[in-house]
Amino acid sequence: MRAMKFRNRLLVAAAVFPLIPGTAWACPACMVGDPKTAGIYLGSTLVMSALPLFLVGGLAYWLWRRHS
Image 1 (cartoon, rainbow, N blue to C red):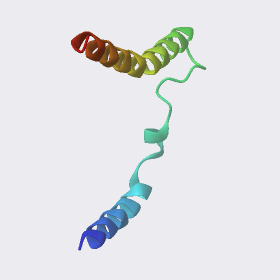
Image 2: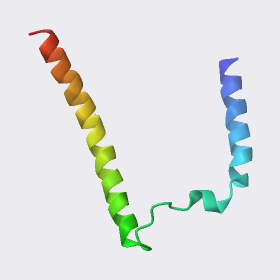
Image 3: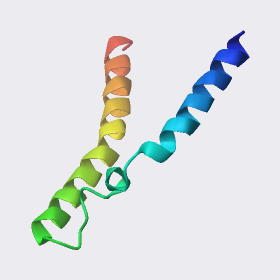
Image 4: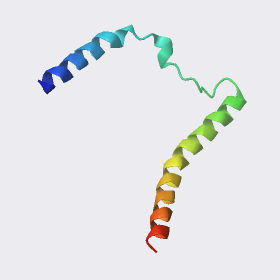
């Protein structure tokens, strides 16, 4: 029963996939156009890269403070 649900979802996704317009796959932060866009792209990349490190570090610090 569960495999049939997954197969049905997979078939629906395969049927809908070609209907997605090509513009949906365009890069919204292309660095070719404006230099300001390149800075924002770099900044967002740094934030997304650092966020998991800060979350894990904050959790480790909280656990250390709680158990010491």
